[in-house]
Length: 324
Image (tube, rainbow, N blue to C red; front, side, top):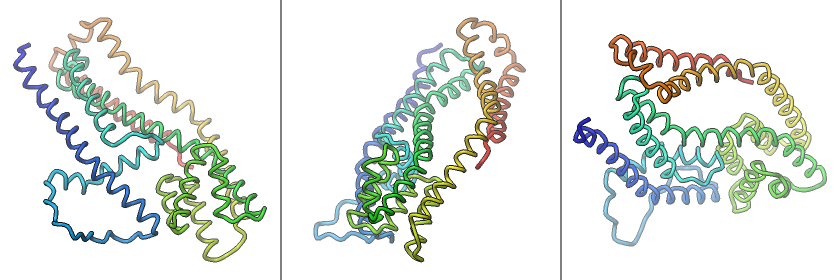
C-alpha cells in the first residue's frame, strides 16, 4: 500500500489523541477546583446554586471557548463519579487516554489484519473493542464493589442497631461502624461520618451517601433514618427489620441468579464464540475467509452477521436481566 495513503489515514488519529491529551490536562485544574467547591458545599450543607465569586484583584482574562466547554460538560463529571464508585484512584484524563490509546492500537491492528473483510470496518470494530476495554474494566470494578457492599450492608445495619441499643448515639455508631467494618461498607460510612463531623447536616451527608452508592437498599436506609428524625420512633428496631428485608431480598436475588445461570452462560458463549472463531481463522488460515470477504455479496453477508450478532446479544441480555 502507498505509504502516503497510510500517513494520511493515521496522522488525523494521532492528532485526535494529542488534542485529547492536551484538553484532558487543561481540564484537570477545573475539575479539582469543582471538587473542592463540592466538598465545601457538603460541609456547609448548602445545596443551592453557587454564588458568584467576588475578588478585589484585577479581573482575570476570560477563558477560551474550549476550556469553557469542558467546564460546562457533564461527561467528565459523570466519569469522575463513575470512577469513584468503582473505588479506583484513576483520573478522568487517565481513563480517556487509555480509551484513546486502545482505539488507535486496535485501529492499526484491524487495518493491517482486516479480519472482517472490510478494511475500514475491521479497523473501527477492533479499535472500538480495544478502546472499550478500560471502560469495561472500570464498570466491572464498580459492579463488583456494589455487589460486595450489598452483601455486607445487612450486617452493617445490625451493627448500628446493636450499638444504639447499647446506648450510643447514631453518629457515634456511624464512627464505630466505619472503623470496624471491612471495605467498601467501612469506607463509605467513614466518609459519611467525616462529612457530618466536619459540620455538614446529617441529611446532606446521607444524600451524598446515596449519590456515591446508588443502590435500592441504601435509599431505603436513608429514607428510614430521615423519616425517624422527623417523626420519631425506635430507629434500632427499624434498622433490624430493614436488615431482615434486605437479607430476604438478597436471598431471592441469589436464587434467581442460580436459576438463570444456564441462560447467562449460554448468552456469553453464543456472543463470544463467533468472535473467537473469526479471530482464530484469521491467524490460523488467513485465506479461508478471504473468498467471502472479496465477494461483493459476501461483504454484505458479513455485515449482516455482525448486525445480527449485536442484536442477538442485546435481546439475550434483556431476557436474562431479571429485576428483583
